[in-house]
Image (cartoon, rainbow, N blue to C red; front, top):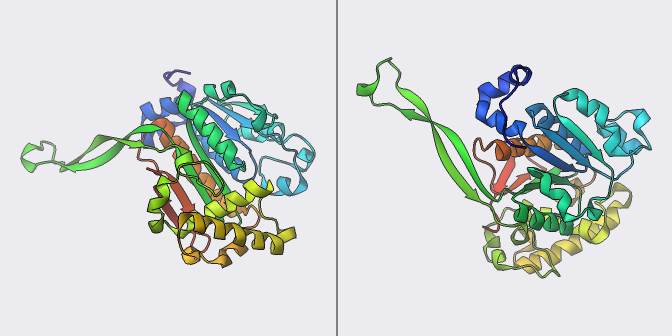
Length: 333
């Protein structure tokens, strides 16, 4: 969808946002078609924020059924949703957040979608999928100039990794005016500065043992935040086991995580002290407050990437499970 002028109804509804980031940015959002893969604890937080921002359309791709546990932590669901297709069950409450956004439910398995399906979107958001699918999607996105951001929550730990291609942005900066040129008494003005971030493809960012990926980026790994390697360890656990670590098998899963950690630090040629094994204790479940924090961060990045307003994170965000401070890492560039 090409950019269009906002209607009077849209201008009134998005008045506060227009004052914040301008009419041009809101029109870019109004033209954006977003795909969200999985709408569970983290996904529902992301969906809420981007729906309120005023995008054109949101497609929710999720083939799961609503469980009792999922219903408790997903505010789009009710007790009547249990046993139903999740993508369809969230529609009523999601649509009520913003009736002006077109919302579509797709209950197919993301793995079974062909490449053509993903071409129509402005940006794709993924949660809770294996890395091989993320990397496959990234290749498709790069061919079709579609932006991609992937995020997950493991207990108290959360992260996102983005590929916004060759992303141009505009940033407002305050500039002091020479006193001799001022006529109205003002001493400063706001100017718009253009910038660009060239994102690396994700197969240069997410590198695991036993893959055929290039390891050139590994040479710079000794300066990485330890949480980056915690992220890789947890993702590799999902890749190997087809699930996240579970409380019901906590003891066994922690041992598996320790083994995976050894293989990853061996690949990157770093010390096992890069992060403490005690962090594994905090990596179970999908903690709702952490979903809310990370969901806000990812949605903010989506809004910035689509509107081209303000600088985006390049390219990894890490939420510290101990301090809850956000850390940024640039990997693979």
